[in-house]
Length: 174
Ligand code: AR6
Image (tube, rainbow, N blue to C red):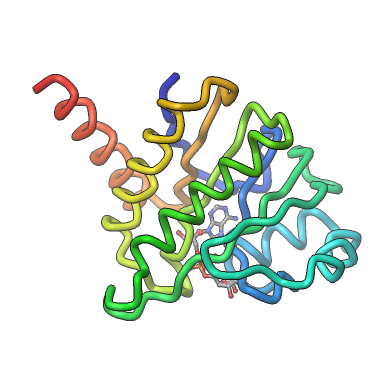
């Protein structure tokens, strides 16, 4: 199985689950979080209120409501602080925990936004490497996932993902 890269609005994707780059309140916000809440409709916030928030690096699941996706996995990325507060490990944990929650719910296809690289200020290339490494390592040990899509909202992010994935393949060949 290979990781796919796709550019566009994650809320339109017909996959079992999309991942939301949320904040610890899980009560909505800007960026992709705002887009997901708008597209899913008002019922989502009611279910989110029952979850009691979410810690950075953790993940919680809800229904997808009006989205094509059946589920939303809400994860909370780290705010970039120069890299001295364990941001790399926390971002890796977002991908890892989201994938674990997906497998627990028998999800076979999942799409991720570029967690933390917007409002939370994580350097995009560093984030792309962590995303690809963490997803690749997870897929090597879990056969139940059939499709993982890394969603880029803009062209530079798409280019970063493609370059990082290309490097992975080159490393494998060495
Ligand atoms: N589809 C796919 N990707 C998107 C979309 C979309 N519709 N909209 C934005 N992106 P951000 P963060 C990309 O800021 O950095 C919220 O207020 C965007 O270009 O959404 O983790 C939360 O409530 C960027 O590449 O999330 C938190 O408070 C990526 O999604 C805070 O922002 C992540 O950008 C989380 O900040």
